Amino acid sequence: DSGVTQTPKHLITATGQRVTLRCSPRSGDLSVYWYQQSLDQGLQFLIQYYNGEERAKGNILERFSAQQFPDLHSELNLSSLELGDSALYFCASTAYPTGELFFGEGSRLTVL
Amino acid sequence: SQQGEEDPQALSIQEGENATMNCSYKTSINNLQWYRQNSGRGLVHLILIRSNEREKHSGRLRVTLDTSKKSSSLLITASRAADTASYFCATASLQGAQKLVFGQGTRLTINP
Figure 1 (cartoon, each protein chain N blue to C red):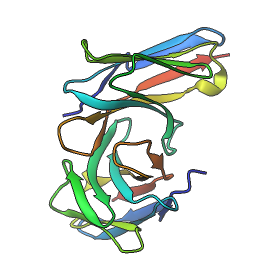
Figure 2: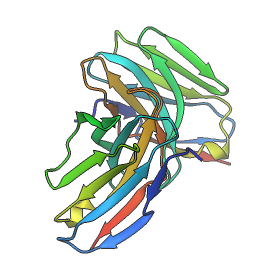
Figure 3: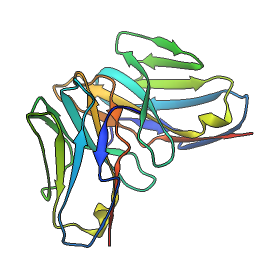
């Protein structure tokens, strides 16, 4: 158990819909990363927060947004969903940026 | 584009043999990390090597880093069936951004 909790574990929705994925980092970790992993693919970096502030951005689509709240949990919002958004979405936390990442078990999103 | 590129993409060996995976990257790095992922699960951190280190050991794992060639290798000695997984390298760039960028991974299969 990494200490990082992601909900929901599985989500099935239709094209055009909006979903919110939630991440609770390890106790004491200030930094949260979001990654997208499509089938048999590597991890695509989406965005990183540190203590509530956005610190780094990857190839995150404009339809996607994220935030980190004062209690350090983070949410990833995906809107106007397309079939190609079907993927595993991972959250990871770390005590300091670029340090060892602790990953959650992921949220598997299926868009039909 | 991905910073790290693993080679080979897939590797199949017999139990007890050694497995070597390579990672090449493009820009100057702060550190390089190796992670393991069992199918559909969250990634697990294996080892972190800093840019001023050349070799690091952890149990049956040995990681080398050659910054002049921008490459790293992960050696798993005396492989076991339980080592079957995908292995990813991740790099933390020196240039400002705090993101950790992952490669596409090497899929390792250990045959009993």
